Image (cartoon, rainbow, N blue to C red; front, side):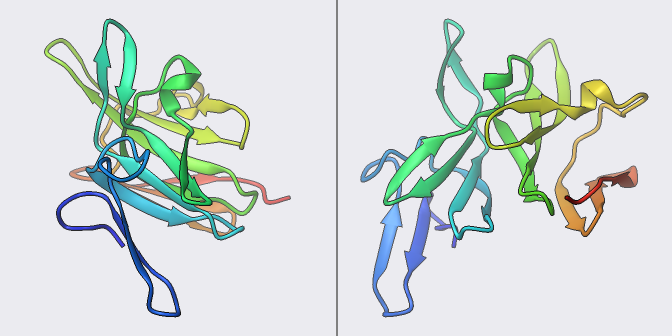
Length: 162
């Protein structure tokens, strides 16, 4: 569950509660935009932050929670994508699909990336005529990826399940 004041709130089946935030854990940013479980039950969080200082990434992006420790898996590590996560979802092969955006005084850009557990792939650069549009939701139904794009509609991408 996303905590209204920032961070992540977890309640176990035995009633124990725990809040994860930047004050009490290595969660990198409290503004959580999306949260998902993978097939192994690990929690993945995406944040609405893309903060850099002298080209050094300070916080934001994607982390997954393993044994009370957040591990960074940031789209910016691909060298192309950004860390302002707008949506994410796991596909039938266990790959994480991530929509990101970057907004600066000189640029407004959006990207769709896939993380296979080892490497990031920026799909929006590889799909011909892929629109530079904000993606606010990703839904994956079997071998179909649906992208929700405000004022544009739905984009459909086919994939193959192993």
